[in-house]
Length: 469
Ligand code: FAD
Ligand code: E0Q
View 1 (cartoon, helix red, strand yellow):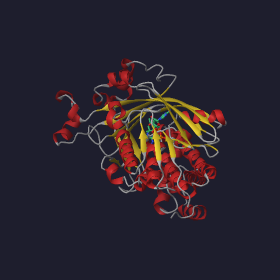
View 2: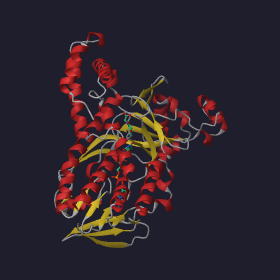
View 3: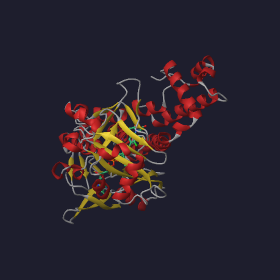
View 4: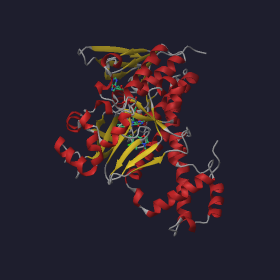
């Protein structure tokens, strides 16, 4: 077996750091160049706590890296979606069948630090404050980095580069100059802004919301249900909140970029407060720094990135958001990027003597799956916000639940296939389409579940859906 090649990774975010760990554990000499300063010294995320939903696909990557225990100690279980209606009523919609089917809220900053530590333990070398500015492709690749702290320039020559530098990837831009990648960026037309529900221990005594006083008296610092992903759906826009281990929640407001209300009209703290008082009244007392958070935090843009090519022969390959940024409404961007890292580490271990083939093979295996989750993430935004009103949708959902109970191995909700299994996303999408067609056929012209012929439904399920596992 030939010696493993020295490996250069651009970007030490979630995907880059996991890839570095998996490759270093397999005996590769790994160097990672990261734009930001070392988060272990700088204090992660500039002090703001931002969190993510971790599901089975991401967990699998962490398991292979030997990180589950360390990371799960920092995670908060989310059993389902807690829906907050306009009138203040709430209901918990479970994600899975029981507590074996849940997702986890994890701090992005802490997860990144755990991954960087693991990569270094495995032998990877990190170079912080190294922002890729340009790459020149010759026999290998010549990379030029800027240190944004002191302005200095740094050069690095590599045989090949792996780009895990996120949605605005500088390596992608450089590759695109050498060989057009067929880049297409589709903006969603909605943006987002993060706000905070502090832990109850941070509230002034006289400001603790009445509903939360009992929790605080018990020593529970969570202002709303701890073990849920909270959502305030409001048609064309919404808020969500994910729990942090120490008792706070990170709230994200999703709003159109234009129209009313939008980030164009809701562009001052006063306008934000008016929107919240009208549409998210129960949130107002929970966000004491609403005005300051709104003024301080930037509006993020949401888009889907499509590329025809992910690699430049044997010299460069993109993965994670750099290759396929998606909208966040299925909570799968990082989970998908972790699957990329696992697939690439396994391919490189077996085939590092033919990098052009390995990169092409990686693209061949992953691109259809990235396209499938991109589409499902877009569809989930619509479903979360409004299909709930449609009678046909409700009947199909009711029949879907009945069939899932009658055929747990064959009829599996698409959300569950995406979230609780590692079946390829493209397969989850295809099975989801078969299931949806079946539900439409069986409910055609019907308005109630007891009008559906369940014996015929059972027959159709057995014909059209092979058992899983
Ligand atoms: P990034 O996390 O963007 O990391 C890229 C790294 O490269 C960064 O460290 C950056 O500093 C560095 N870098 C950038 N440019 C350069 C350069 N020129 N030179 C050197 N280094 C550079 N996913 C989930 O799975 N679950 C969720 O619940 C979820 N929620 C989300 C909510 C929101 C609002 C958004 C926007 C996304 C969400 N995602 C979620 C998606 C998730 O954030 C991304 O898919 C994930 O961070 C991608 O990881 P990455 O390492 O590819 O890119
Ligand atoms: C999840 C978990 C940012 C974000 C992350 C998520 C989810 C949502 C809505 C959002 C989808 C869901 N979801 O609840 O259906 O499952 O990660 Cl907005």
